[in-house]
Length: 466
Image (cartoon, rainbow, N blue to C red; front, side, top):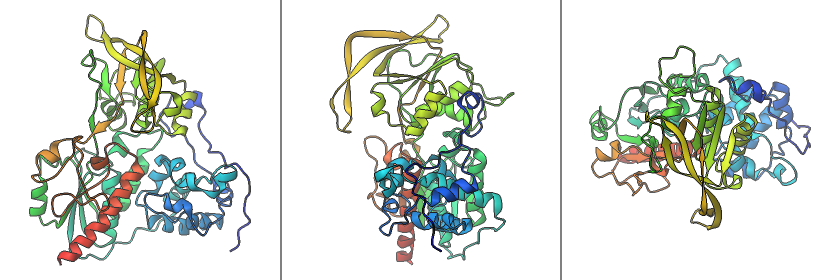
């Protein structure tokens, strides 16, 4: 059916909670498109034959095809197209950095704003969840077994693709709830946990088994997973080991890693009244770092009642690695950005509690290996920020447990598992890996892309052995 194109240069705005309201609750900030908004935005898509947006999608969703279905008001058809490539569409529609991937290649972006691809993906997934009673179809078994370590986005993507091919897949999760970073890291106001649970339930419906409280490397080893009848193992255990700056005072009470702080709030529900999870209800908080995790921690601290929350970042606003939307939301909610600033010491009081951080001003020098300007200290520029809590959000690395209990598994100097890069094949036969366990901390969608690539390689590997 021919579609009357919408040639508006600007995309349909996303309805959101007002900043003064949302900074006091943990409800989802973005409210989602209405039906009419979604159809109207979909009509901005030109349905390009070359599909440049698809080439920039790590999981290769046929983006013009699903958007064309939305424009024709065939929402279930749109969902079917997305589901052929993505096991977590409602998640990706919310947290994927589309502006740096598919939307950055959108032809409409050459003269105006790109199509709101992520917003449309979210709408389609939500519409399906709210209106469809059809259960996922159980694939025909092929008689082979595969184990997945970790139930984060990479593990779930691999599990979904393998299950659809007929494999009996068991996912082993170290924590008491499945979802990995989707449940312990990303706050409720960005990604409601009911959304994550629904996606997991869809995987269970096609035969994926998930065993929680299973710390691989401690409860079971990789070798023991093979002894249990699995013909291949995929390691998608993420990068949950926090990094610190190794500056004086980091052992003071009131210094958190972002992982711990967010886990207490998101997974253990410390924000709920009467929660048993201990956490500081701070008045003045400094979050060190400039990525999405730093934004999440800062915005959580504001919702937990802090009067002043500072983002302390050693480069300028232009170099912030966080998503533009998350930075804008943080600024609207009153987060204070202390850029070109680097902590050099955490100051404590007589009781061992944090009372401030000593910082030094920075200026930008020549570009470093990452292409960003290297921050350089300014002489005689020390000053103190009065805070009672400091949250370190400067990155993570993989937990050493798996590599230390798996003989022959090659890792690099950062503790990341070494693979061939394309298929996820490691130095151990039948063992594949992907996501943050290989790359270090990255995005949900890149982890999913690695899981999908590994699932394809595992299928080819098992077929070659039989």
